[in-house]
Length: 436
Image (cartoon, rainbow, N blue to C red; front, side, top):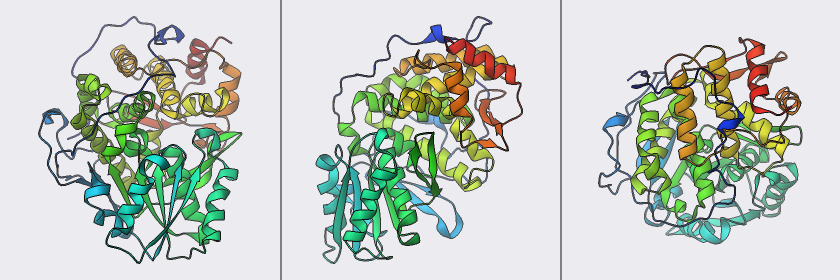
C-alpha cells in the first residue's frame, strides 16, 4: 500500500495556527495510574523496499481482537547486521530465551536508571540467568532524566565496565527509556571499540521509536545528540508489561513519536490514530501494542532503506529541529522530549502550510490530535525567535551552513527533508509562535 491522501477535509481559517492554539489541557504534572498490557495479536510483516510501509492494512486492524501468545517479530533488514524486534506481553518472564540467545560471552552489564531499576532490574537479571548459570550480570544505575544525558554520566558506564573487567565478548543491555538506550548504546559502541548490545525499552517513546535504528549518543550544552554513533543492537525486546508503571505524562510524550509516523509516511495509520486516540490515552492494551508494532514497522523499513540518514531517514525528524531547540533553550528535562517534539511538529506543519505545501485541513487535524493526546501545541513563552535561530544553527541537520528541515508536502503521509525553502516562511512561523 502506498501512502494515501487524507480521506476527509475539515474546515479551517485561511490563517495557520499560531501561539493562540496552545492547549490549556497540557500540564507537565499529570497524575499516573497503572494497567496491564496484554500480548498483541501476531501479524506477519511482508514489507521490503517500499517507501511507505504496510506490513498489515491498518484500517482493518481491530483493537478489540483477542491477542495470541506468540510475540510479534519485526525485522530490521540490514543484511548480515539485521536484527529482530520482539513485541509482546510477559516476554521477560515467560520467554527469557528470546533475550538469552542474543547474549554473547559470559558477562553482561545492565545499564538502567534510578526509576527503572527498582521496577525491572531483578526481572531482567532473572531473564538473563534463568537456566543459564554460566552468565554473570553486573549493573550500573544512572540518575534519571534528560539533564543527565552527558559525558559525565556516560563515564559511570565505562567505570563499571572497566572495574568489572569486561572483555570484548561481553554484552551491554540497555534497560530504560530513550536516555538510557542512547547512552548505553554509545557506551557499547565505544567500549573496547564495540561490544554486543541489546535494547530493552520500557516506555512508549523508546518502544515505538528510539530503541530501533542504531542512533546512540549524548547531549552537549550547545546541542542535543551532537556526540554519538550509529550502532545497532543484536535485538530489541519490547515487553509491553513494562508500560504498567508508565506515568500519564510519559505515555503522552511517547505518542508524539507515534503520531509522527502517520504524518510523514503512513496516512492510514494517522487515520487509525484519530479513531483510536481515546483508547490509547485510556491505555487499551491492544491499541497500545498495535501502535508500537506499527511504528516499529515504519521505523524498520526506513532504517533498512537509509541507515545513516542520508535521505529518507531524515524525515523521521519531523518537528525535531524546532523541538530540540525548545529542549535546549528551555532547559533539558523541563519538558519531556515528546512534549517538545509535539510543539515542534505544530511549528513544522505551520511552516509547511505557509509555503503552500499542504492544505489547511492537515494543519487542523495535527493540532486536534495533539490536543487530544494532551500534548502542547506551542513552545514555552520564554522561547524567542533569536533563541530558536541560534540553537537551530547548530542542529545536526545543518549541511554546508544550510539548515535542512523536515516538512510536510502534498497529501497527508508525504514529507520532505530539504534545505530548499523560502526563508521568509521560517521567519513567519517563528514570529507567529514567539513573542519576540
